[in-house]
Length: 342
Image (cartoon, rainbow, N blue to C red; front, side):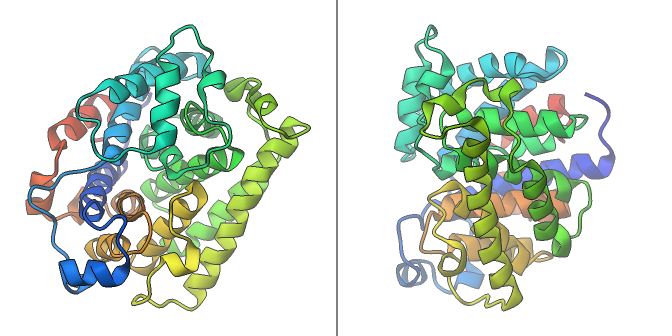
């Protein structure tokens, strides 16, 4: 896999812990509108980490993906063949787990149930019409593994989505989310991030990754693989337009979901998580609190904002008292060490 630099390793640890912290902060506020959140939690800039700091399926599935990714990378070169089996097994294990009781999404439940039939090709299990945020809420580990080529990282991000969420926008949004995490871990400046993501989307807009996705496109209604994947990238480019407009006239006191969407779908989760981070690129707790105080899928928005902030600022972004209390902390760190995330 190659050796990661100290800065990159610190950034990766920050991303994983930040993801879980955002998830825990947004867990109690999901399904609430902003007035209800303020009535329950007080001023949003003063929101405190719940006690106990329990997470949702967002962190659970991030761990599942990370474990599958670790297994695949330890086997040698990362390919679709080496990744699909381990990640599929981890997703099914999550589905079967008694701890899977945190209001998981229907798409993940249905797809994982179908993946549990070992004789079923994964493309017959995926929910081809779903672009829910479950596709990319969990993808951060793909952005954190050092030593992958751009094509490997892109393919892995899209395949891990495709196992459950087969819609082309889910694939593109997962690819962009992993790309954003990688760019920030490598030192990209927040002010240049949306431009870098837009350029990446344009460069890959008509590239269908047959080496990773096989004939997935045939399960949709598109006439060609190119039109299938372009449909997803075009929706992501559209939400990046909304993100840029929001950043051009920033209003930190207004619910971010009003600008970039409620986050129940993959491209909006990406954009709204990015908006919360980019409003406060050097104030990670403020970014998490803004993301948790939203009218949409608050835990997923906040977990993505936390992954971006942690990748940018590193492990020291998070107060030790918060990081020490997060559920699954030992699992996150145990995963990090052999993958050289830590």
